[in-house]
Amino acid sequence: MKKLILAATTLALSTAATAQSAQERLDERYNLALAAGYKALMLCSAIGHAEQGITRRTPESVHEWELSGIQAPLDDIIRDLPFEIIRFGEGQTINRVEVSWTSDMPPRVAEFGANGCAVWPIGKVPPAPLIITEDDEVLYPRIGTWTDTIGASNARPVIEAAFDGTYGESTRSTVVVVRKDGEVVDWVWEEGFSPFTPQRTWSVAKSIASTVLGAAVFRGAADVNASAGLGNGSDEKPRADITIDNALRMASGRYSNTPGNRTDPLYWGGTTVDERAQNWPVIHAPGTVYRYANNDTLAAVQAIEGTFEEVSPRDLLRTIGMHDTVAETDWQGNYVLSSQVWATAYDLSKLGQLYLNDGITEDGARILPEGWMDYVSDPSGPQPEGSNWGYGAGWWTFRRPEGNVFEGVPDDAFAARGNRGQYVVVVPSRNVVIVRRGEDMVGTRFDIAAFTRDVLAALQE
Image 1 (tube, helix red, strand yellow):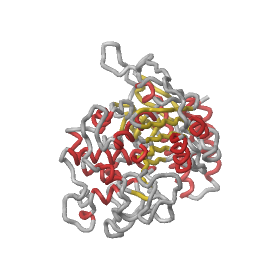
Image 2 (cartoon, rainbow, N blue to C red):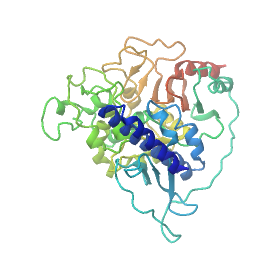
Image 3 (cartoon, rainbow, N blue to C red):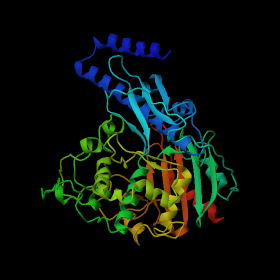
Image 4 (cartoon, helix red, strand yellow):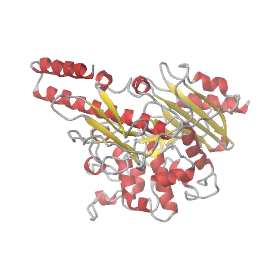
């Protein structure tokens, strides 16, 4: 069946080629390659990370949630591409996922390793599958269970409304977790998910990146006012003048060719952070213009990559208590902390709690500088145009310098936000964290401000 589908795809491309320009044929082929890389990475990460914890995902589930309602033109291509999940052996962990996309090129591959899944470059030939015996060291899927011991809070009706379209027509919530006064007080999830199901964080990863950077600052290993190193070790101006703070605040002044700085060649094409994120030219003085850009977060993280030998992102996440969160890398080992992190809703609630505790973990260890919460939630730099939201240092704010228009949401509230409806809302004055996970389709949007307002009001009853 897989060969028939692939043959049909190839035939369709051949038939249409006579009516297409050379550029159109090139774009169609490139989109096939991207779709195959997207599919390989999503299948590898969703299934592989679940199996390292206590939940399970199936290919059918990933097709229904992660691989539906994505951006055009990939959405029309991706689900029919043939795939194969290759394991180290019967009942063992995933080795890699291969997705076929054309008859004259190798399949696209996402390989599972110590830092999760990394997608290989287009055209890289996969070796023969590895076979691991019981005598070899390998990560075996962990079998476990958990029990829902959390009772319904006053906010339960509001939380349940997050799953019925009340806060956005046709939106698709998967999990909601609410913390208050340091404890989980309520959670609700869609069938097939749980608070312990890893999902891609998308741009919530930028707030995790800001946390990784804050920990390096606390250890004395980084300085947000230092150069981000984009001058390649020289005093080349203005590139060398771009600071880590500029990069965290999306104010590097560098050009990006699309709103939101789409980085498909890195995320799905198999290029590296070095190849894709660091070489964009500067067109504004650093610190003067806001431009949301994945490349800025990637530059901020790469500026401190030398500190990861002492404390890696994985080590730091474990210290926070985020045991089922994995920061993935490109195939050359560079962290893609602009998007490519897999985390459970429960883990993300712990991230929010860390900020409520002013950078002190549940074990009582300080890992962020005093006042880091105020730093990341301060919209002090240049701000987004045409938005009610403000932007701090890797975190969004409900207030802008000129004020807060979100009725019922305190001025001190701030949030991590990601594609397809990922949110971590932190409300210091109410000692509340709200996590909403989703797989919202393109063209739909979950109203996190209204949801936050209603949850906070219900918790006060």
